[in-house]
Length: 161
Length: 394
Image 1: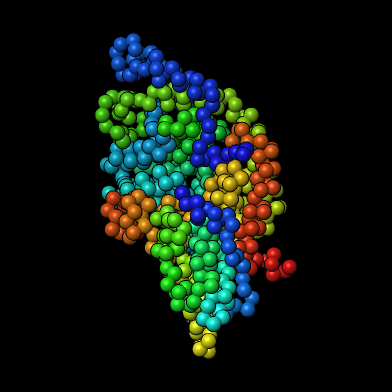
Image 2: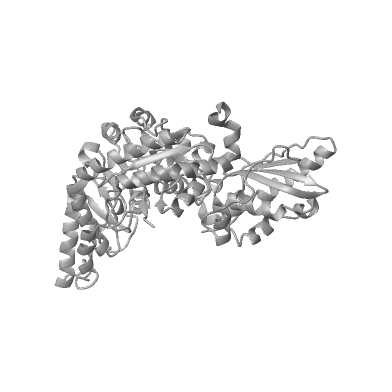
């Protein structure tokens, strides 16, 4: 199911842990829908000097977190803000489609950590946005919003009624 | 690497004797059982014998067995066939919240054409209360369907008592006994059921073949229309090799059942007891005693099932999980939610289903390999630090 790169990062995740005196912390996800990722960053001269993460989730979630931490480390904040879902998927040599929404949240958590750092340096508090349940694609026909999947009524709860 | 299969609910190996019985029906005995000539007739005779073997396993009459392509077909056939044939009597059906997808999704389809479905809740062990069944009955109820054993959590339902309620109200009663038939004693008279779904693979027969027991006199319409096979109830040329294999596997299951149970129950109980000891905040899912002989279902807090599954797989151990990340629909197991287990805890589900070939060594290996995996993942988990009692008191 997973690419070799995903499995390698899952087996040996880089940069796992916390930074006790982090300059910014970003969290995304909730346990009900699957994955939670927390990123910690240390910033010096506008550069991500250190990045660490903790993740609760599936193999993809752990590999995504590890990859994002590697992609971000040593980059400027502006460069790190440009890491997105697509570039993470490409770097991992692909992710199964059903994992695109729920597990590919590492860059969001990193961006929140950067926002947190920026707000703090302005003397403000960063408020984490609420995360709703993820929109998932229909397992039968791959249509992203199952309401538009006419043949999957029995499987997709959204389309029943 | 030594491989350990603890996912028998997904697949079990076919017994060598069963394969041996099947082989001639691929080649020299290739006939169609519906043919009038002797090439067909010898196959018809073999199918008759298989029907007797399957009937004997559940204490039914051979004429009450209809062969199908799998447990899913049997469940669809029972629900759709009975509802269709009894439209004049009513359109209400009673079931539970913990049924297999082949019941759940078949009922969603029926609801779209006007069938009314009552889904009964379960207690924290996943047990249905027969009194709830009684209370849900209306004068429009034409079918009750409650599963016998839940493959995911292992709980065995009080089917005999529910059967008594159904008989008293003269309502046909179906049970999905795919997880139990050939595994524990299943007797259609003792259970007081009118329809019962079974499949061959759980008792070491081939995949792709199942059966539906239909008590004589039950009104049911076929799911597949066509030629007059299976007494007109299931059209299509029989899966001859599959049926022969199912018959042989049923015969052996009847002989070996008690020995298999005596082997599995101590393994199951040892694995449960030692896992709960070895891993903090690891909880048993399902009923402690009314439980399938090979079923070990637990939840491990602060970690997610797929990541445990993948690490175990690297060590050659095959297990399953009810975590959302594993399911194709990305939803946490509806069975655990119905039991009142919160979604976050259900994410740490591990479902181990042991079979007759598992050994004490297999159990020991899982007990030495799993706890370090859990610790590694917990050390990575942001939830562990925040809420773990273990860390707070340390």
